[in-house]
Amino acid sequence: MTIPIPQAAVALAMTTVLAGAWAAPAGAAQTHVRTTCARQTRVLSTPGGLVVGFLARGAPVLVLARTRNHYWAEVRAVHSIVGWIHNRDLC
Image (cartoon, rainbow, N blue to C red; front, side):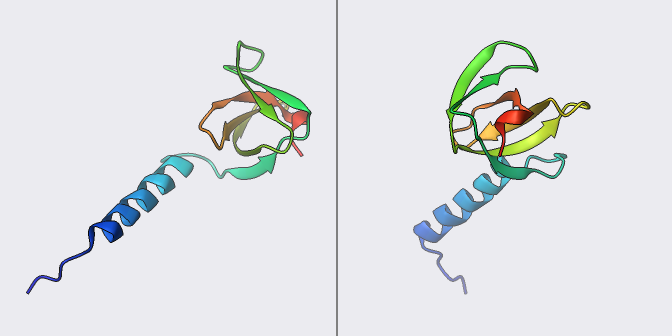
């Protein structure tokens, strides 16, 4: 006997799985949720590289990595922009 599963439940389960995979990629180090303190934070492609976007003050980000000197932090913003910001721009 097979019990039918409502399509909404399947869709919710798939969304949860996909969201979890996006938030914590395989092999990633432990991430920390932080917010930006600067009025406007530039997001760069590499430490000291080209500007790929901007974040407003209070934007939540996941810190994915840091440089050895802790001057730069690789972040992922809520709207999926990934790049490097100055560590001093984090609260």
